[in-house]
Image 1 (cartoon, rainbow, N blue to C red):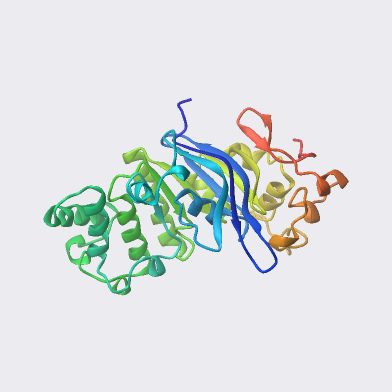
Image 2 (tube, rainbow, N blue to C red):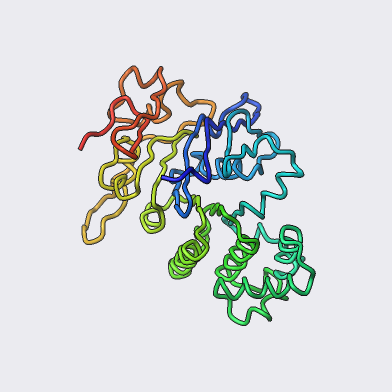
Length: 323
């Protein structure tokens, strides 16, 4: 396999609180290859979005990237100055945020906001930047793109705003796209259209995609490989089909088991007992210890390393599920 486009090594992102520092991302490592989609899934608060914002170096106080390396095409971007990082962010890497109404500037037209990025990274004059912006709006399926170019975010529907965000993200031909729950606020029909759009553009542009979601159905639809996170740590990572058929971590098994099954009627859905502990209450060992039916004393005090159970399938568990 070729060298990875994205290579994250021992990433830690720490936030300072009244109760002391806590690691929202705790020693996370993974690779993504050219043209591949890596899905990152887990419950709210597990560290998915913080991982993505760390890759873009968008962590603000009281947070900071406290340890690790993030290689983009072999270059550690954590060592770059903010000035150099601005050339990477929006140019080489781009992000689609979860809620476009808060990500877009409400007092600037859609075209103005796309233009800013195109003129900064592609150094095109205004008239050519406008042509490029209208072309991108057309590419993402927005009707009458010339008219929509001059509209404001509040004048568009949620699906159209998300398409405009995608157009903005892709306007400078990024090699890496980070999609942070881009379909969460949309109804299922528009969600399917957005997923199809991202997949089509990825194939056309041969992009590398990191796709963040808590929806296992979306993950199964769009991801080549999937990483499961819990408590800021990686539980498991494998080819998506392998992960769904043979989950090795008890948390992954419980997540998959909690989904309603088409064609099966049941009075109760399967649940995961207990609740996610507060960040400052995580055990020193496995973060899933207090909810795991396979846990033993070793799990409470020692953190399980991410270990390969078969080719391309790794799990952080002392007592993995066997199939």
